[in-house]
Length: 452
Image (cartoon, rainbow, N blue to C red):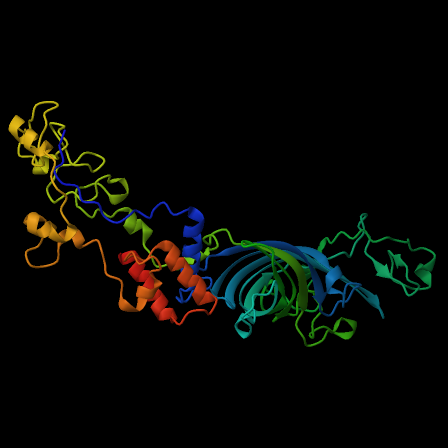
């Protein structure tokens, strides 16, 4: 064990300030921080899926024409990624089917085809026009796509009879004529689309390709449900460069002659989008320390003893000092003096040693036990020159910093130290507009408080 010969007491420890005051101070300090906070600093892929309806807009019309919200069911999946808060790119894949059934003016056409559509679009949501975050945002998008189709028609019933549409509204197995009126059989459509329209080659179109291209024009509204979940509802018009989806084209003759436009279609939808990969939403504290590399801080080792500071219980061991797994300097003889400054590393157990680790004699212990008069702090350098730097600053005074003149009036108890309570009072006065300090001076005061 060691018998201390000199004890110098520094300023009072203020770490016991209650947590409520400390939290208040930290919060107020962060309010003064004018560092710009980036919005959506990290943009990760967002996954979406949903349900919608296809509505065909071509030469063959049916009851769904003009009512895009009552078309045939379809499914959509998407992956999107923001470039910035108002512009993003998204990849869409949609699967469903289109139908058309037209019975009018002698034009008795029907078809059904599966549709597999995939494309890439650029979407814009107008966020750069307003600063306030709204729960619902409009958006528009434009892109390019390809789609695949395979149109089939229902031309025969379950017994193999071909449909003939008569002017009285009936469907029969023979063409309309006075002779066949009594011999024909009445039929009912089974709505099984068994006939490949391309194979029929009705207008001499041949083996036309069943993959086409188009331009999707999309618009709608997006609603934010939570930090990671949003919902979109909208409609996409697919402007296509193909007129063969319903097998009626401008190359047809007589009643089979179509218009010059391509076979477009609508897709109306409701989709949900999940942001699974972005980091959690930042708090005010996270934003303040946004540029801090905490991983590097975790690995810091100020004294270079091989034990990182977070696990180092003695973080200021001198270079070359041997330490244990907790960073504490080794003390082989357990006399309280670490080996790196122990002049007698093998002192006897329970021996009384001095500050150099050397066993003290009986005469030395008697001399130390004698009562000595106290020494004024201003005379310490004269009595103990070893703790002072010659004519320079006194080592034992290095932990005290003199209060700048402009902050002296804030030291209410005139103890030469700006306390937490005095700092909090000044900050409160600043927010109450009851002080002449500028915000820069308030920053300076805060920095000085931590330098004391």
